[in-house]
Length: 540
Image 1 (cartoon, one colour):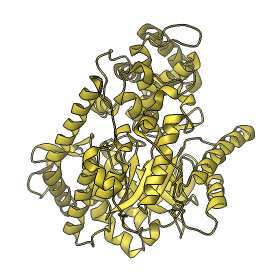
Image 2 (cartoon, one colour; image 1 turned 180 degrees about the vertical axis):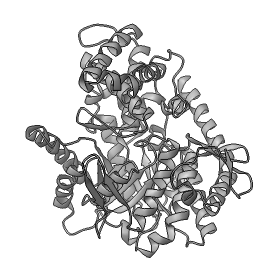
Image 3 (tube, helix red, strand yellow; image 1 turned 120 degrees about the vertical axis):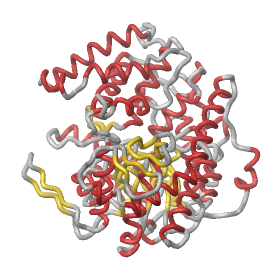
Image 4 (cartoon, helix red, strand yellow; image 1 turned 45 degrees about the horizontal axis):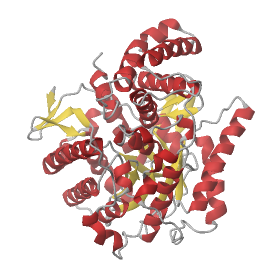
């Protein structure tokens, strides 16, 4: 534990590389200010989530808010985008490691979302090192020499626009305390980044741009707006310098899209269709409803009724308010050794982006540099010489509350293959996360915390409602345990090094954690798997 020269601030993490450069007194003063002004309200609103969940568990439902009807029916728009955010056709996402940051910024995409959240394992070294990498990236000096392949990685003269995703409101940073309490992870990530980089970004014609995750209400968006105001005042920045694109990735937030844009209207950069977390949230919030049981994860696509309704409403809402509508993730990793597999993957990217561009989205996400070109091609076919298609008003869209809740209209079966995939991916991802890697390539897909959450929540849901496989077997904890044993053997064979697997792969810890969040009992549901996993991280 160490104390910096900021009243009430204590660093409880170990000394890591470049920490003195990142954790400066000036930067921590801003983080402390944000904590003192916002943390009590953050904890209060997390409590409000629990109260709403209790209402849903007791038979309640979700609907558009009567008390904010004037906002939804009002004639207002968000602030116009700054020049660096007018064109956002394809954004690539990934963690803040040096190699990833360089490859993403050089990928030919229009934007790169550097992720401190779902694609990140929050080791202290990752959190501090990620900030250091972004400091260098903003100044164009980031470099990485890969000893494994002998390659040198350097930034191009022209790079993608940088955006940063801080952690959600539910996560804390245990390595930094203010007045004896851990700070919110998101305020830590946001405060350090905007302090170190806002002016340098403005000098380069860009700005401090963010993706804001996991919100469940417009009151949580108001907290972010207050954080932006506090930081701008503290740093002497003009109002509206910071911009945030909100990920609509929870079911409650889908009922408050207008209100969320309104709260952030001076700082808004639009909304994003965070499809994977949205599926997880739909399962989680209505977990006790048998009619909400979902089929195999692969069957829950953007074309099923409840996902299609959410996607259409997002575009309509954004464009009515002059905001960008950003599409979802193509998680495929095109093979560089199998031409046929690569073609199938890139065809899937094209199909997904063709659908989104046609629906009116102004940009989209990919997980791999090889996916940038086909995604860009599909967006360009629709965009032509326009930067975006905000002028495409979706007056044809009419989505009601029942449409957003139409999980019971999702067609598909629950198969042994789907169950095995959930167990395998869940265990493999947790293993990767515990080793400090939050973005894991598994069977040709880039998996992150969101897809692992779908995997374990589906298993929980299937057991809770005694769902049956397509061959008639009931899904039970015992069946899941048998599958976990055989899938671990499969993983061991694929890795091919028993000593490494047992030492570094953490098979038993990973299985234990997966079963803790997937088999936790019919009356208990762990809100986020990363919460118990964080208790294990760097402590075992």
